[in-house]
Length: 177
Image 1 (tube, helix red, strand yellow):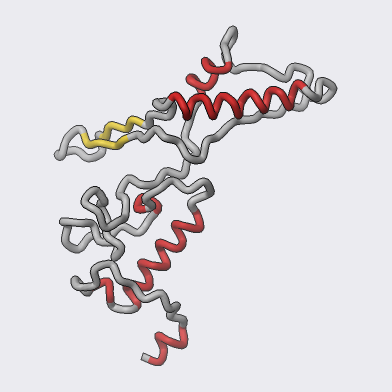
Image 2: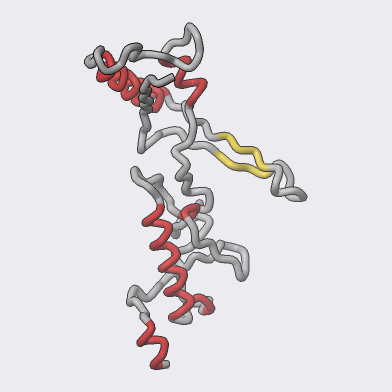
């Protein structure tokens, strides 16, 4: 009571490990198998542990500020134990419906789901590589791209092959038509 606390965490923006999302059954898509594989790569683990150690070193350098600079959430745990028990997502998942023009991509540049008529995806799931930043701006640009496809009529053009006008269509443009 009345004491101040601080918490720190280490995040790795370019992990090597890749998780997966699979359907257990085609009959019930809500029953997905999600395996994030947060710490599957030894390199990912080493980088995150190094970051955690640096946070501890900073706290120990200011003993007047931090009375107990190393308080792990579980008794008798090591830095690695703590990481393995507390690792979690950065909450900006991408790539589950990766966009691209190769055989392994799910969505084309026109945002159409390959092999599924009449279905487009316009969210962060199409981002092919995890950005080392918040995904908000990228998701907004994807929405802008989708809107541009609709406004230019390319959304209904099966021959668009992923081409999209990059010209912004404002209110004056749509009123003139």
